[in-house]
Amino acid sequence: MNTEKSVRSLEKIVALCKRRGFVYPSAEIYGGLNGVYDFGHLGSIIKSNLRQAWIESLQNSFGPIVMFEGALLGPEAVWKASGHVDHFSDPMVDCLNCKRRFRADDPDVAKGCPACGKKDSWTPVRQFNMMFKTEVGAAADGSSIAYLRPETAQAIFINFKNVLSTTRVKIPFGIAQIGKAFRNEITPKQFLFRMREFEQMEMEWFCHADGAQKYFEFWCAHRLNFYRMIGIDMNNIRQRPHEKDELAHYSTCCTDVEYNFPFGWKEMEGIAHRGTFDLTQHSKFSGKDLSVFDEETKTSFVPTVVECSVGTDRAFLMLLFDAYAEDVVEGETRIVLRLAPRMAPVKAAILPLTKKQTEPATKLYEDLKKLGHQIEFDESGSIGKRYRRQDEIGTPVCITYDFDSDNDQCVTVRDRDTTKQERIALDQVAAYIKKMLGK
Ligand code: ATP
Image (cartoon, rainbow, N blue to C red; front, side, top):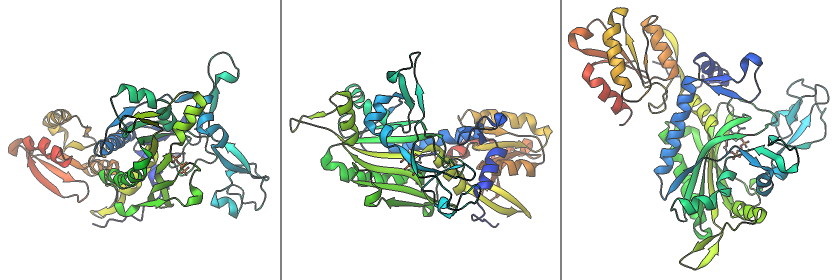
């Protein structure tokens, strides 16, 4: 068998996602909405596996980390304090020839207009604020302006005192949140890589300034566990500390976790030492005290924050790229997603060889479903075709109930990656799947 990973390309991943119902362009029957996607059955299961793994990777660290779910809409005051109203913008230029709009810092723009090819025909660079602005309520005045959040973190900062006083946590501790964020990206591209509506998994770690650098280094090291847990080839992961001129003025250090996509090493996650900036700003703008009293030193201090922020959809894209392979089985090229079993949307498929085995195979299917995992039952089409479908969606094992199964009470289990088959007793199948999932 010949496994070839260099065959992966964005076009192939997009086609696979559509063909197998992982991801659809949003509002497709109306022509779609650029940078916005819907997730189908298998796609939403993979996303929920990612969320679960992320939560587990945090629980497996140290110190208390509590969960949080903030609102998507926030009043203008929040975004003024956070600096987003004034500074959350990208430089933009328009092509004077075809009128298309691009990010001025896009390396392709330096070569000429990516749409019409015209060279040196640009408007002056303007700043474009990426937040989605709206009005809340019937009265359209200044006080009703609200924004869809461009990151999930601010909801955590403004609730910091609520969480502290209601969850019996003490500094240092973390608040973790998974939720949608919205950015009116000038040029959404590379499928799920740069979207206008996307999901973030963010954890804000609140600590004393004295220990913050140590925690920053700890989180940089610890976050790699998440990528190991979800089965990413660690040769495709690297960390890139930011240069001084890339840092926000309040941040002393920041490291990106990057993945080696076919279109280059790209940011998956940002780990940032944010100092006391966020709580200080919200304290100043809201007039509320967000400092903490230290019993030991009998002094108040504003906690320092270390942030770990990863995009769920970007992680989804990474997962598919990393798992995608093509090889030759019995003279035919097949596409296979070599997903770690815990990330696979379907854990096993029950395939009766002919309709004659439907009944006992259905019983096995019903029994296995009780494990609480997604199990599929498929009796239509040739067995080869059914295997191919399961390979493409990353199902780790296919279980065939065949002509001998009634007599020997055994089934054939086929491994997705090696295509090797072994015969195991019917009453051992559940244990086999549990072992495969490390349970
Ligand atoms: P980029 O430089 O790629 O625009 P960023 O540095 O602005 O990203 P952050 O604000 O640090 O991103 O957001 C944290 C994480 O959220 C990113 O590492 C990424 O995984 C995800 N993310 C950010 N913007 C998008 C987007 N437009 N589409 C999908 N995921 C995104």
